[in-house]
Length: 217
Image (cartoon, rainbow, N blue to C red; front, side):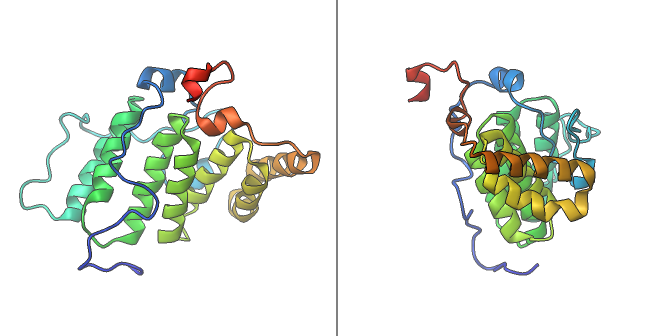
């Protein structure tokens, strides 16, 4: 892969992979967040029903260990599988931890790191932590500019926050690859930009409009 130094420890360019998440419980996230999928194929983007990660053969708790002699890359793959299982079960904080554990390992594979960042963005978005989801998408896009899932997820995060100009920028790049539905979203984003609609600051903070002052703090 390009852009990797196998001899140097990996440093996440945007955030601490083990940063603790504090914005509510998994139950609240599952109840309030839109389901977002870490699946690779951006053409499956759907307005009405977003696919979740494919079920793995083993549950997260019983997924076969890669063994003591596994390479860091193999161990990272193991964390991705466990993360996808947790995501499918709507245990988003646990999924976040698994993807972060994979990213913390020292291996050289930019394309796979891009997938882990995009998957972690999915977990963050499901937890309504849109700003951090955007940062992970940016990291994913930097590592693999051809990986369209990063732009798709970032566009969704921008749309969730009401950041219409940035959403429109990503949707413009995606439309030639993703067809009519993406074009519809782009048209809506452009309409909002022209209308002068501003960001939903509650969404930026990852809280609902009914949030109290203490919750916002």
